Length: 406
Image (cartoon, rainbow, N blue to C red; front, side):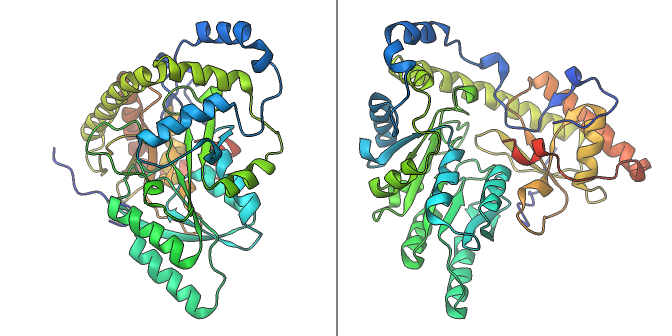
């Protein structure tokens, strides 16, 4: 598929006419409000029983007990790990910023998929790196294509990449999962060409179908892979607790680059107690069932209201990558849908250089099935209006919110 052109199926908001409270949110990757966990009792206990820890400055690498709990979780996923491999972060995306600080200088190449996570693009650009984009198919990044690109760069004497960023499970924005064979090959390429891999895996535990694939980090024998995890998608994004898992030397360099010092010990302790009591595991089970129902509702609604659009059903995560009918542009549809009361993201935002036309990213996590159906109907209505008078919807620049929202 060209940027994941789907097989044919069988069967942030700009001002508009709809009141803000009635906008159906299918743009940013926000948590489902109805399932945000009640952590009030844990928070009270932390504020009382752990106040000398929770209300003090936190240790640079994170609370030792939390790091140990993360180690157990990482090991259970088949990755060798110890406390010295773990750095607690303010969300997983901080791992990318820190790695760029310690590894990359302006002009250095960084490898990303085409398309890729829009906030990653923003962070990479802020460090002045050159983007090397690699196409995707149904099995994720085309690593054989990457191998050819790297060999060609080396033969020309071009500068070689320092870092590769990828979301291997339920990719943002396309929803595809990188195959095990390609994960292993990616590690081999990292060793051959001397770059590091940041494996950003916020959605890994939100699998609705299919069989799990070993983490990229599980194939790593030379310290070339840094894993990034977070509780944002599986528990609560506002808590802002994530982590990096890597070679102790790299972890130490990342820690030294943290301008804020240690992360908030109060929220770290909340996460730790939620892990110890089984609250997070229970929440993941419940959340996966609800997210699967949301995805089914979105697919059914697209089939009803947008029969000439195409998509592939992801096996988990938060997002569906929709290919629009050929006679409308993604940027115009995004603007017209906003005016109709449906917030979505144009696919143009997820490309570092020349964007593929005709795609939008839909988030099925945030809204109820009923609201999702309403939102899809509004998109269909927007497309109908565009076909009648496309000149009314002339897209402008992406807003800061669109550039920096998950």
